[in-house]
Every structure is written in C-alpha cells, then in structure tokens.
Length: 414
Image 1 (cartoon, one colour):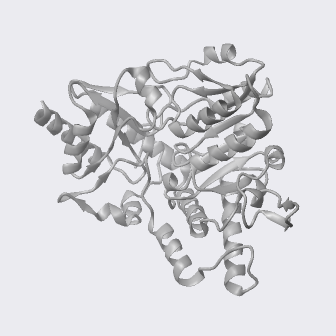
Image 2 (cartoon, rainbow, N blue to C red):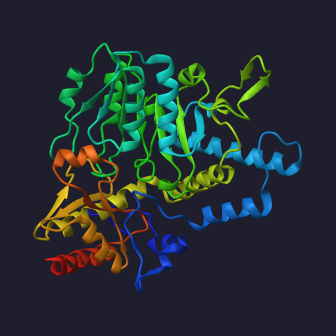
C-alpha cells in the first residue's frame, strides 16, 4: 500500500486477515465486518495458540513450585512481564503490575494513593471525556475522604480546553487522571504537555491508555506520567488481564491493594511482612495464560510495526470520515484535529440502537449507546452515538459496505 505522501507502508492485509480466524465468520449470512475494536479487539492465531499451549502443555501455578512445570511457566510469565516493560519503555521490570484490566489498575491506584495522600478538602482533576472507569473510582474515593472532583471541559470538537487547566489546578489538587485517547471521540490528548504542567506543581498524573496502546507507540518515560494503565483485550490479547505501570517511588510507598497468597515475605498471626513490587500487588493465582498471551499480542503488533499500523489506520479513518460526511443528516461527534481510528456519529431522527440493529443484520458490528461516557453525552445533549472503531485488519472495502449499510438503514427507518 502507498500513502498520499508516497511512503510505502508494510501492511500485508491478506496475510494479516488470515491471522484472525474470526474474520472468516458469517453473521446473518453476511461476511463479518468487525468495527467494534474499541470495545474489544479480535485475537490473532499466535495468541490463541499460546493460550492453548499453556493449558495443553504447561498448566501449572507460578512462583511457588519447585517442580519442572512450575519453574518453566514462572520463567515464561516473568519473561512476559519483561516484554511489556520494554514495550512501554518502563525503567524497571518491577514497575509492571499485572491486573485484571484498565478498570482494576485505576481502582488499585485510587485505593492505594487515596489511602496515603487524599484528605478532606483535597481535589482530583479529571476530564469531561473520561470513561466511567476513570470517574467512578475517584468519586468513591472523594465520597469516602470528603474530597472533590474537578473537571477539565472540552470544546464542541471534542478537544480539551487547556486554557482552563491553570485555573483548575490549585494547592489542593493532589492528582490528575485522564484518558490518552478518548474511547468515544477518538481525540488524542496532549498527555505529555499536561504531565509537564502538572509536575511543575508536584502533581502526579495517571493516564488511561486503554485506547492508545493498540494504535500508537507509548513511551511512559517520555510521557513522564506517574501511572499508565491498559487492558490486554483491546490490544489483541486475552480478556481479564491488564497492566498498571507505576513509577517505582509510588509503588514502594503504596500498601498492598488486596491481601492473599503471593504478596508476602513472612506471615505470623501477629504481623505480615510484604514482598516488594510487583508481587506486593498481585495477590492470589494470577491470570497466567493472560499475561503470556498479552506479551504474544504485543510481539505480534511489533512485528507489523506500530508506525505502519498508525499510518494505515489514519488512512482508514480519513477514508471513513469522507464517506460518512457525505451522507445527509449524519453528524460526526468528535472532530478533533488529533484523532485515532474512532468515528462516533448520530443520524437525525434515528435512534443509535435502531441503526445498530439494522447494521448487525448486514453483518456489521458497531457499538451503540453512551460508551460508558455519559457525562460526555450530556455535554453534546444526545443519548448516545453509533461508534465505528477500526483496527489494522479492517479494509476500505468494509468501509464501503458500512457506508451503504448506513444509507440502507436510513431509508428503512425513515
């Protein structure tokens, strides 16, 4: 494939689509067109095979056993942690905590940070485009501690109004939590600049990277964020596993998030001495095959090249935007200058749910509703949107079918 600038992009679509078995599926007698990647991405054969191999050849618990299976799978699991460390350029491997996903990682930080550092009257700063997973844990913390949430507003393009940031930050601001890329709007936020501004006031920053990790190269040291969280299932890995990156100084200070086996050095009925990070935060038997599968998924996208993925998905986004903009009565919600491969839209006089049902009859999977961003919907004065989110295995031909499907749905519903 050649871009408009003449750059050769190394995306072998035929081979890539062969790597994803589910793309051969038929839905309602039509070839599956999967545009719900923002909710969960499909899995390549390499990930599926890694999970199958674990259960058929390697199944054992980690960290505690002296027998061969346990020792071998412990080495592989910890090697997966090292791969993830290198993928996001964390300084130390013990800054990588395996979690259940983005939500679990945010809750871990809210619990541990809040326990140590949040007091009555303190403030936590979010943005108007946050996913509920990056709102509710902080609300619960504020209710418990009698602290306050403050919100960076957005403009009607779906971009943060950064001029408001200086006014919102005060001596009471103890933490900023924001999304790297909006799951609803596709807006790419200027995280590095926000972190720099926050750090000048000694305010730590948590970044929700669930939507960024599949689409762009993330370097946590370059961003200089204090915490970065993401989920395996959105980056072509298994469900039920995710990553919390935390700077060493915070993880050393934090108490355990949960109690249980695996987080200890010694236990007596009088006192427990805890292990260091990362084990301190990984109570119980972890999602072993999930961690291994996540590392395999990252290997897979690195083999393609995130720079190639970014260029190709940007081309898909531009193509789809041009196609949809030409449809009368269709309005795209989220027109930021810097966007990732998400298009949210509404059609005048048609409920998103009805549109989604008709598209499904045509074999097209999209997401409809508020996308766990109800405050964002309130900003735009709408109940929800139809959201198409693209991955590198999608094609312009699929977008053509999608566009015709929207036109057909409009003619039927009107």
